[in-house]
Length: 397
Image (cartoon, rainbow, N blue to C red; front, side, top):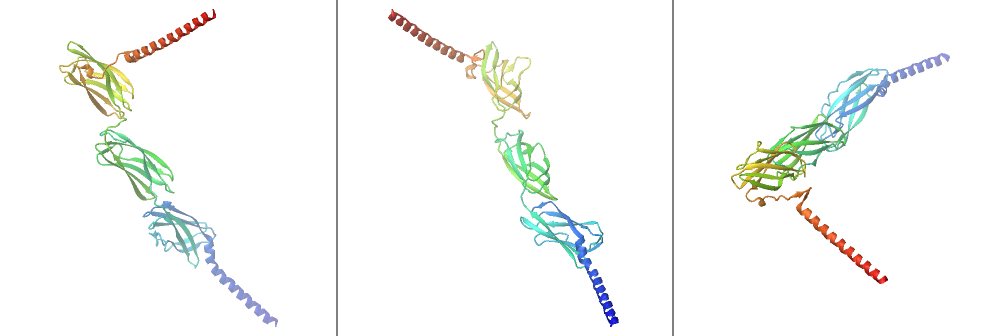
């Protein structure tokens, strides 16, 4: 009887040992999955636009102390296309403590939204690892706005246009370049480089353009979202005409003095515009001829609303001659205006009022008149006061 129990006990031990060994052979499946962890998944660019391609890099690590054999790795999504879905059909073994990276290229085929890509690892056993990666598709473009531009452009004159370029996207963009284009327009800069533009950030840009005729200016702003190039276009109408803010030197208070065949022309020149007038020069045109050693009278620079006096001596066989005002504007461009001077009838020219101590004669006469009236009023009031006082004294007596 005791031998029978011993035999039964031995058989039970052998069966138990076999079961334990069988379990040990199956545990690597769960053990492998437990050893492998997804460390991170990065997407470049972080946010896609429709039609963009992006690169996803998934990094895994073997956190255990045994090697793990990986059969294949794949990335899949019903909405987005994985362009290299068969790259990792055969992977290999990853040692303990080691890391491994998997690179995939995807294309945003659908509209805006958030999509989840499934990263899948299949081990040599029957175990596997699944990891979901969110990918956002957003079609917001850079915003280009005009901060300040001329209402009217002057033909063949350089003008400035101030723009702002803003990034409303959730991710940064790179290689931002602003380029002015247009028929009949000469830009000073072929392009302006901004570079990287962070989310919700903006940069100011100044363009200098010289229009040759009335036209449209097209501002192209190109940028890269990852490796994907995009372009935003802004059209600005360019209407040519006379600018009200330009420098405007004019002559006034002209006085013509004749002495035989010679004339002396006196007057003031005032910058009636809103910009500086530089290097102002007055010249008497044909048929007049200057008798000074220098035929031109140099005025110099005038600020807005600033005046200067001038005096020219000349001869002229005719009654009239053109007086030319040449100057340079704030951009250094040469400008000129011409006014006709009448020598035989000086009264037809802007009259020159006699000034004394900075006041003209009319102002002085008005002041004298007001003074006389005030003196008369004071005299009458004082006289009435004296008469009233005399009557009061007589009554007391």
